Image 1 (cartoon, rainbow, N blue to C red):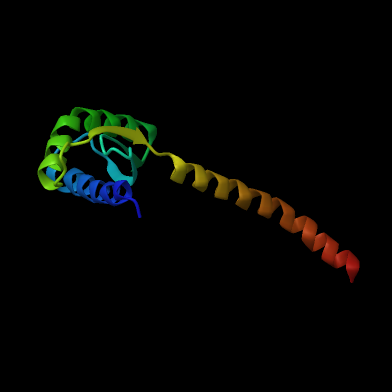
Image 2: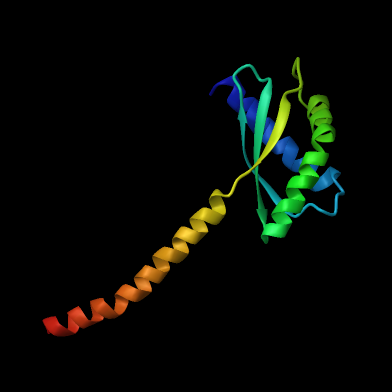
Length: 125
């Protein structure tokens, strides 16, 4: 495993702890850090997050994370022994919502096809 992947895992864990235990911003929703993409030189980290809730919670959380960016970066620098603290950027990850929507559509298709399959079974008998 490359060093950047190991550092990305540590950053993911630390950012998650910082958000849930250190930040007291009321705008924060139920946030999950989904992954961290780190450049090979460890200078830039893109932190992906997802938020449970409506669009309003997404917007508030994104603003809260943007305003806490410096605070989070400073704590990461203190907790992780690196020569340089990486520049961080938060990016919303909507893949979980997307997969839920796909599952809903598949369920709808399945429900529509069930009566057709039952008719076919009755015709074969």
